[in-house]
Image (cartoon, rainbow, N blue to C red; front, side, top):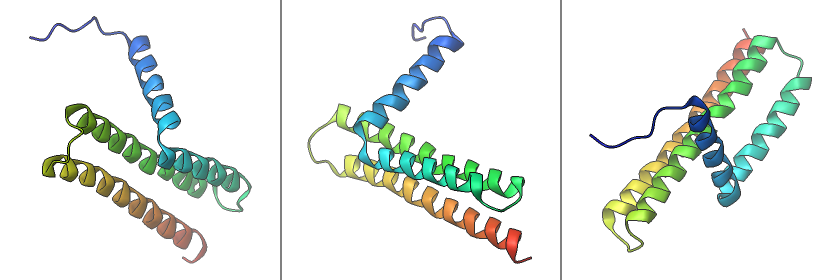
Length: 121
């Protein structure tokens, strides 16, 4: 068994916060996604739509952020293992990028369905 330190919710929360800010500091795409999310949230605050629709749209923005964090973790792990070009490393990074792409597509579809059901049904 691996020697692990005693579990602490405070330490684990701190690790998560450190990870978030490390990615925010070093990943341009993540900075853009956070900025877009903040602008969208401000816009939703003033949007003339029901609270539930605003909530669904606002929360859907986390899908892309979570996917980008996963992609960043994959990229860092691959870079830790090898800096050389390797087919499997490329496939891992491409899969992480695909995760973000599908998260964006899912978020757009959620927006389309929510706005359509709010205003056109």
